[in-house]
Amino acid sequence: MKKIMVTCMLLLIASVAVMGQKFALIDMEYILKNIPAYEMTNEQLSQISQKWQNEVEAIQQEAQNMYKTYQSDLVFLSAEMKTKREEEIVKKEQEAQDVKRKYFGPEGELYKKRDSLMKPIQDEVYNAVKEISEDKGYQLVVDRASAMSIIFASPKIDISNEVLVKLGYSK
Image 1 (tube, rainbow, N blue to C red):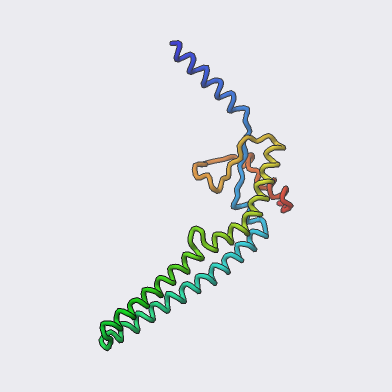
Image 2 (image 1 turned 180 degrees about the vertical axis):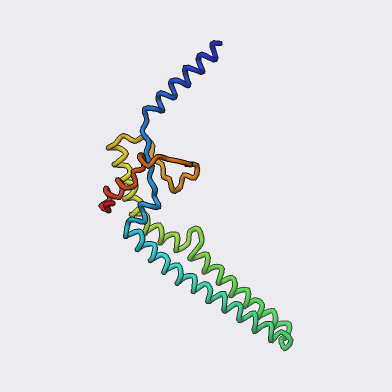
């Protein structure tokens, strides 16, 4: 009986503490879509990515052409020439993989470029959210775009437009 009373008291205290907290939501996708610098940065990254992708595809195509030539010349080649050509093809395919990794790998050029271009925009949004949170006393701000477990949230607690106004992009 005593344990049940203690448990009930703890639940009551916890629920009162939660009621006093203020929460807010933001929609980061919505905010970023309304920032022109973000859209320009995305376009710039897309162009760079396409250029690098074309470079990788050109090397891969060259390797495929080498293989087709090898296939057609196969009957005329000596064992030594076959080995040499096979090594050249493997080397070209490896070169394509290396270039792909250099540009698109986890520590690749595209990642570094995206980080250097997007970080200032993200920091600006973060600082605006932080200022609004401190001004209005929010203890928690959740990003609706990345929080998959949010099934429903009242539009009254969405401060995305306030963030845009704070950044100078009035809505």
